Amino acid sequence: MNRNSLTTAVIAGIAGVAGIANMASAVNLNPDGLGQVLLYPYYTVNGGQQTLLSVVNTDTVNGKAVKVRFLEGYNSREVLDFNLFLSPADVWTANLFALQDLHDAAVTGIGGAIFTTDKSCTAPPLNESTSGSIKYVAFRNFAYTGGNADTGPSTDDRTREGHFEMIEMADIVGDPLLGDITHVNSVPPDCGSAEGDFEANKLTAVPTGGLFGSASVVNVSKGSFYAYNADALDGFSSSILNFGTQSLLPTLANANDAGSPATVTSQVFNNGKLITSPYPGAQAIDAVSSVFAAANIYNQYESATNGAVATDWVVNFPTKRFYVDAQPGGTIVGAKAAIPPFEHLFGAKDPGNGLGLSCTVVGISIYDREENTTSAPVSGFSPPPPSQPPSSLCHETNVITFNASGTTSILSSGLAVNINPIGDAGWANLTLTGNLHDFRLATNGNQFHGLPITGFEAVKFTNGNVGGVLANYAGVYRHRQSRSCTNAGVGVGTPNGAGNTPPCS
Image 1 (spheres, rainbow, N blue to C red):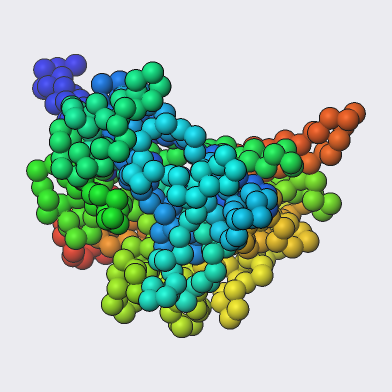
Image 2: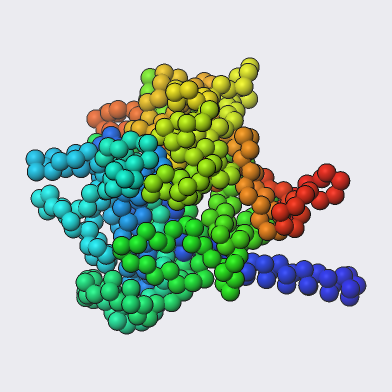
């Protein structure tokens, strides 16, 4: 290699390393599972199930102040949030359950609730109500009832299914707050002072991440256990995000870049290539959405006509509410139309939509394990919402069943639609790039095509008693995906060249 070639290679290598280093100040989906923000695509307390959850602070020096937020599945209205304070090397766990499963004559209600015996500090404490030895907090309906009604269901059972997120607000780097929350003989010495010291910003610093988490949907009586890892966003914030327990902030729209409040950048790997997309600060949510952008999602299914084998897909749009919720209490109140890449405002009486819905049309292809497919395009999900296209996903958290005889869901979902499977096993492809599913342009002209999506396949095998032993098995598999991104030129402009739209860079 001559000197000029060597010099070029070295410069290219340094630029590549710099690009990776800059991911610290650009929001990205960390493939190693550690981050400042954790997104858990599904929880449920339906059908006698509970959802167990955990978060781990891998920082052995600093504590973490974390906003924990639970969102129902129709329109992602909040059903509970609180502040969590993790000491160095701390783990926090909790259990989501249905109030009606307490079997306590003094307890009424059909909604969900949270219970924990963990000693880590929360504000407020999770001990609002008591049933026997269990102290718990019931999920709230305030965000979707009364003056905040959004045309979706107004009953408490709406809180029983959805998704949740954890956003690191700050590192905790010194006393008095670090002393409040750091365990002494397994117990924090002063949880009662933690929130006040946090809001007074007593020795907090810019969040550095290092969180990981997981959740499990468990049904003890039926022997099922669906466990998954949380998605981890890194490079989310270069600013302290100290917000008290009375605040609905921070949200996913609070992403920010180091030293550039007017720009929020995302970095996404696509086919081995790093795509960098800067967005105006007012469109910070687009940076977060872009790291989940999918043109297609793929996964497998297994099914049996007698119900002994069944599959559910969880399909969660983690940022959808920032594009479709224009009703009282929503995130874009006053908007006249949904923001791309989504089609309909929640509850809009548009063709293809309706009250309590924000429908998104997707394409469906399905194959068995021997390459057989339908002779015509798959007609869509069944049953479709009234007067809606049959291939619509109409909630923020969706469940797709693969059942020849109906929509029986192994997750007992109230948000389920069905795909009629081909045979007893195969795979399916949801195409997400149709129906004008184009993201808003980044300031460098990058434009993702598809929808922001996450989720997994859950499959269950029910064998009943085999030799007197319960023989049920379950598994969870993350969705696979492809991406589509083109570049229309620097700024909001026309395609480069003679009608050609090059790929993103």
